[in-house]
Amino acid sequence: MDVIIFTNGGIGDQIQYSSLIAEHGIRGDKVNIFCHPELAFFHESNPNVTNILSEVDNVKVYDIGYNFAIKTELAAIFSETPIKKRIGYIDVFGKIAATNQAAKELMHLALDKNAQSPKTLAEWFCEIAGVIYSPISFYINTNNFDCSPDIVIQYKTNVPDKDWGLDQTKAIVDRFKDKEVWITTHDKNKEELEGIGCKVLSGSIGEITNTAELISRSKLLVTPDTATFNLGVALGIPTIILTNGYDRGFCIPKNNNKVTVIKGETMNDISTDVVIEAITRRLDV
Image 1 (cartoon, rainbow, N blue to C red):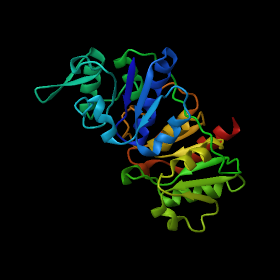
Image 2 (cartoon, helix red, strand yellow; image 1 turned 120 degrees about the vertical axis):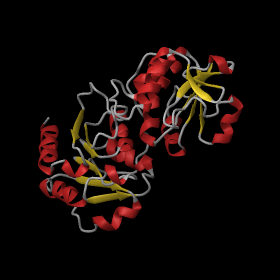
Image 3 (cartoon, helix red, strand yellow; image 1 turned 135 degrees about the horizontal axis):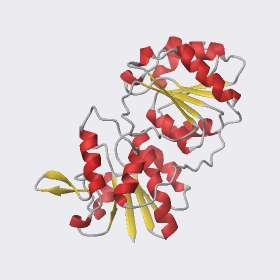
Image 4 (cartoon, rainbow, N blue to C red; image 1 turned 90 degrees about the vertical axis):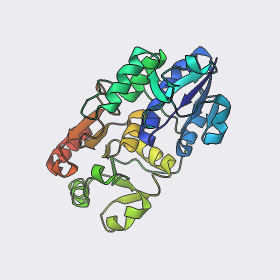
């Protein structure tokens, strides 16, 4: 069977859909994945992926469209079958319709901004598609760094409401100045970090292959960003995520002993002392 995994949403969401690849590859399906161009690199080394599409025009032959997506945040698996048999969602007279009960539950959940999800998006879509959920994993085969950071910190995101402040970041670096600490950030934030006392990797999150390699070499990732968070999870690195609840449970796995969630009503409510304590526990382990 020819299968396409069409990923949508932000980079963090798209990383999750890697969970859908394993079973199809094991079954011998021809697996095509449509993804953000910055993620194509990770799938190129995956033996379960046959073809990588990162331009919308390339997907038109599959007649995918966007009609299964809820506010462009969700994705599904498709085979080369008539539109009525698509897995997940179909367009019925210009409206989104779910094709099975799991898809219907997710649709209601996605539209209810006050609801907390009992499963991550990856788990939901495995259930919708009728495949076994597999932990996310990425393949890294670059060798651009000669270091073994104790801590990698993501400074700022593309969404200001998710940002943890410069003073708090400096406090973490100062507290662990006896450790090898790196900060990853976008180029636009680099000047803010002048003289911070640790190494800084900047670029568009850019150059996400460098970010991923740096994380893969580290002992611990601290991040307010779901993109780097999901990279940490996919790479098997202990990860602390700082959140104000924006995720609603769609990205953060519930039963992963390598994940620590620190939550505040706002990002400014997250105590530096609490984060330092969590880092200390993780490094001691």
